[in-house]
Image 1: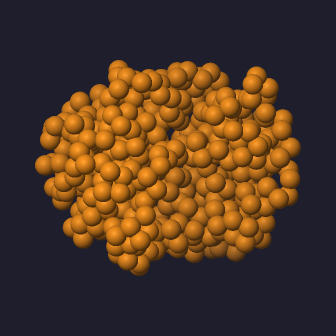
Image 2 (image 1 turned 30 degrees about the vertical axis):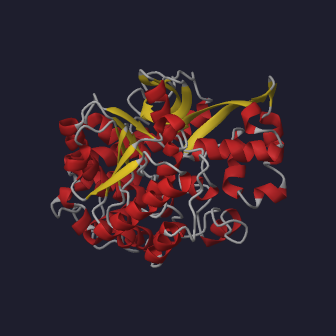
Length: 467
């Protein structure tokens, strides 16, 4: 019997999707699921849904137990899957709405930007505590993390526990590959692709069918209005940078200074009329504002809204199956670089192909990214690193520095504005960031006036000093 812990099991979709995927393998049909959540009511619903999956899928040997104390759940576990949200909708609302007052227009805000940085501050300390319990109660367990901001949290977890068996998972690589296969009208299983970079901004540097390079066709398709309008920022990436990128237009519109400069630009490149994922303001709030969650979970539990029992493209079940059976699988995971991508920092978290079998997970060397793509990734990695260090050191000034270096924030605000926004954000999040012990960045005087008060020091230009 495979012992699988799911932390954050009370989510609306997460635990049910994972459970159905895992049980779809005959070798895993007798798995025991240990569901963990801090909300007893959500946990009760999750248990009912999982039991219903057992019944409808005819899995008589599968079993489930529930826990609000994760330490009890972790004892002797084989796999630990984590997807948590600290602060809930209220925290998300604040990290989207407060920056807007300063001109920073976010769509998702869970990866970079002020939203991603605040999520790191809220979430990384909790994940470090979870990891400490894993090391105490099931040190050999494989840890699979689905929590965002993936890059920042993976970096913090791995630095906190270097010997941990860990991978961070997303679904953007496989979903984007499916999208392009559909546009090309070629079955995905016939396509050979290589993708590498960082989470939510990885690049398909190879996309082939029977040895033929499909990238030229992809570049032409990106310019077709019927495709462009539904995925505009991402198609601009292809048009100008030459390579398909993972994730939605909403995500990639936030990681640079090109698409969200002002309301007019948001309407041009992130128009909600054509796709909800295109990047309109605050889309993340729509995803998490679910006052109907109890009704929805009730419907799932009585099979009024049934769970699809067919295996999805999520990698979590594939990893468990490969490690349990030895049947090799290739997934895309977030791991420390260690030479996989030559021209990204070696201690950075990168998203690359990984081979999984009974011996565990082994990242694959993918070589160098085209220099302009590496430059774009590196800009993000430096911000991520600052956010992680700010959390680890509980340094509010470093939080400000991460905000100041974020491309979207820097495009939108002066340093004085960024400092004021960071102070307001951290004040609003105090209850969710106890690691900061109430500290916020220091206030700094606003010096600028239209006309200076009093005499002004003359400054000699060093370039003219020797003339």
